[in-house]
Length: 230
Length: 193
Image 1 (tube, rainbow over the protein chains, first blue to last red):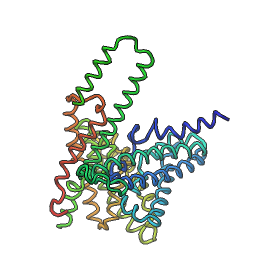
Image 2: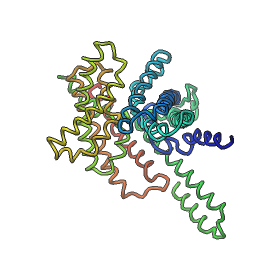
Image 3: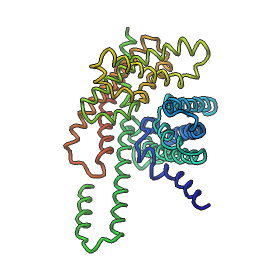
């Protein structure tokens, strides 16, 4: 019993960490940059996309043996478009505020490459249970990424987070962060930070796995990095 | 006439699809490494966007709206765009092979380009008539191409820069995009749009 559950766990966490669709695979950039002017909108978009992803993964996994290979992409897109329409109607009916804020980006979930990518790469090859976990993991990773980008932009650009005023006496918010250029800028810096962290992690592993004696190289390298920072 | 000019300028400069609406970021990053590919992709997008605006508007106004099926617009639009891209590909291949060779590889990619679907949906949201929709689609495509070509020039320069290791590749590309986008925010408020 231990084996299948550990596989399920790794499918679930894969989307959040290792293959985070936004931060690692750089998919679905349009909504990631467009709606993240506020942390709340990021979460709204993330949940809407997760709903579509879960629905389409379930249906596609169920029909994967019936659909002929040649017409699978149009079929997948039609399924995704159906769920996108459902989300649009639900948001319009129950959360009109979010619906207004996200606007045209809700119908555009249908062309979000994350969803088609998971349909093609995962749901069309795996059973329903695993497909649901995959959708939740990928959707969770997408939501977390949007929350991070949205939080950074909201705090720096408006001085608030989820509507709470944070930076009143610390610094004046830079409005450009919630304007379109801020989206590109914040995302660039977040990816750079991830690159830096993963490089550090690899370097630590190398050191702990037996560096030998020669520490001069390490000192030289850290000196170099210090230089870069200044 | 005035509203047509305003729609065109608005879509090209003020509300540029890529730099202020974040539509079509994938091709924007994918094919902007060289000016020549940027031009090819831009041409294909202008072509498809103009036709798709006309086609989706016609389908919506004459087929969906009179039958109370407006809520089906997402499904129908994406199928119309996919069919249109196929059709354009076949026609170009048969009658204008030179243009097909120039645009060929970019055409299939356009089906999932959110800029094309975005233009179709915005036409309906903004209640444009057929002429306004076509002008909007055309100028949104021109704006996309303009952003792509400007950005490809920036990226060609970036090739020769000394960039810190963590910023190499995507991060510096996004930061360069931010700077190009700052330039376009300068158009905000132009002609009161």
